[in-house]
Length: 470
Image 1 (tube, rainbow, N blue to C red):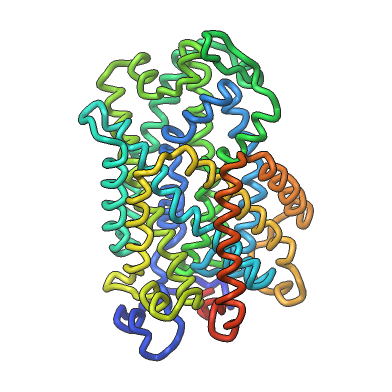
Image 2 (image 1 turned 135 degrees about the vertical axis):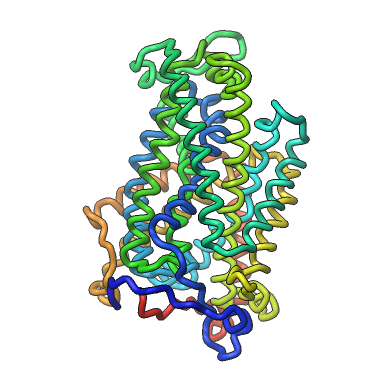
């Protein structure tokens, strides 16, 4: 293996899709750090997180929202270090499950896959459901129908060439950053309170008063906070399509985390300082605050940018999530007809059946209330990060000790601290979310016990790409 950059190896679509030689399917290495970062940033979708998920945090945390996100960002640095090392040690489109399955055993990999599958099916719908609110200045659309439209458009885009999607999402990403920058400028220009308010959590109450936000409330909100910043790990899903992944995966992960945190956190600080009163901040009406600080035209522009950001997020999430199903089929996780379908590539080298399997159920989930879906996703993301941290503890065993890879600093201290913290955050999550996630995981465990485990020679065989470009 070498870090020398070489031209991407083209894979003929008909060969890749039909698999006539019986060899494992391969994706084409077609993007570098810039394209990978654009796709990964778009999956973090900082503007969508800022304008769709953060208002819920304002409702429960008030002025402590920025502090909570800052703490989450620090935690995510340790998570990013784990992902950077593991994503370069085991570069596979399977992402977390291929990593943990290789390092901690196939059953552990299966549990990680189930958590990622929950995220795969739920997150795009949660984001898409926020579209209607930001289309309101132009047209009134039922939130569910708007979400369905976003998911269907994202599914169509996911069937196209990855390089083309990198540029499409890059254009949308510029609009996201512009919207976040405008909000930050207006918020700071209309500051109503001092910086000290960021460190004294206060939230408005229904009776017109206020209450203090305690440490327990902040820690409980960490699950949603991790959901807000989740997405920088997309780089490891693209590791089979990134040129020179041993070098570029780590760069993409770390650059994405730094940029996305800045795009989210700076406007959150500005909104906290600039909100005219505590009730307005707790209400989380970002478009209303922007219109009040400027005029209706600016408010409309920001709303449209946010709507485009949500569409952008849908496109990238469908792309990422289809790669997870593609890899699971290549690793024989399902009955053979399903494996064959999910591993089929179209003329654009995209796993088209897997893309439809992600996008169409996502459209159906837009008719479900998003509150519980967000909480379930928070639990799944936290559990997934915890299992990845466990994998990071095992990454320097004898078998992988000398494998060329980016190595994280302060190992094994950071993974251990991360495991302890994430386990506590998981403990604090809502009971319904824990029950739903636990129930899905239990059902998946039965599938493992009665279908996969008895067929270990032919099912759930985690394969890693053997590619001289690694």
